[in-house]
Image 1 (tube, rainbow, N blue to C red):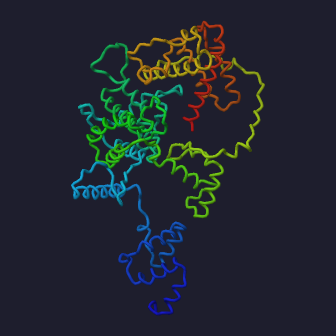
Image 2 (image 1 turned 30 degrees about the horizontal axis):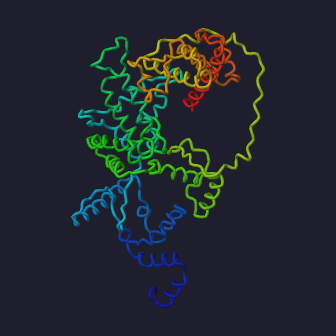
Image 3 (image 1 turned 180 degrees about the vertical axis):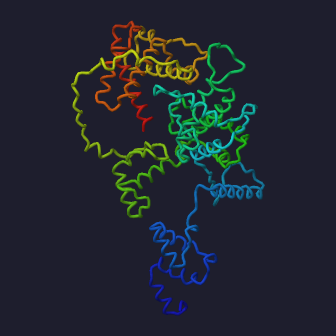
Length: 531
């Protein structure tokens, strides 16, 4: 029947998709499932039906001869993309060998156009982290054999307990270190481990066998942690070099634009031999290798897919959760997001870093008014119920916690100096040391620019610690009560002494600002930990 002229005439009058579907049934219905072969045109039609409704596609497969779902879907997490890239590179390299020409670039050619393969840096970092979770990593750096272990990060997490809501590695949590709690698809849980801060803390609190210049120092971590610290710093710098988003050079010198005279090439030449010496057998090594080749003036942040993923996340989350919008829905959603400046709130569970790109002013600015202030509670504060010196009592801290509090006090001094007493020499002498010792000073070791941090004196450090204990006391016992900030301020005025300040002009202002600033910091930290 399919060969009759009348049937062919009827088929020609149908639409192109319908013709494709009818011809597919006529050619495939007699064949067994494993013997069916479909053209690209037929697969595209089937894929369009599947995207429209996967459940309806399953029902159609029971009636008609259409491709299975397995032939329509390709998992982009597999190594097929890497194999394709390697095959194309090998083919191009072979063409150069036939022409007796040197193959200089890590690029394949199509129609005489060079195409440079780029691998997504966040995914490469997660791949390294996932391998390090399962096995130790041996590598060679500066002609020394080193071994990095994930166990060292567990030791650091146990040591940095943060009883006062302040920790030296405040972003390092169980969700970053414990394998059973790590969200494997979250990039930030890998990037926050491979960081300069974690690396520096590991280095500063290890047992230095060859150096006993400080007798009273409590060495808290084994010497082999230095190898892990070196690896973390290496990948922190490498990740920064592929995450550049600014032309302005800051203290993060690698997180900038790649130029002919930038430091990126020195870093990559230094890292390449280390990367090749790593014992891991993973495609991430080759991905980093290809990404380090043939960059010129380029904002490397644009080479990863975070902005694209954030955009499609906004599309899927518009109005209701629509993970498979049609073409018409996508067009309308895109127009709406364009008017609204693509500024929907960044999802708390999103896998990507927040994208700050802007196009238009949000229309919400024209509609939103300042909300009215909540009514104040004029009830008398019962200070006698909470005013007790027992709040300030506590056991001794280990050295890591002690250094954390010094670091926090130095940060408070930096903000106070900027806002209150920038040019007051009397206040400066009362608050911080202008010539700090370089030996055994954690703040000195973590201060990359030697200008951004302050080195607090003992009196101010004790004062800051007492305020933190008072704030912690309230949030531990009565975080739900109203007027808690006002009560904290009253209690600080009654218990904490600022007698070491000799400047009559700024003394009261410093007391008020330090209390207010610490309350803000502790509330932020406490809310993050609770939520």
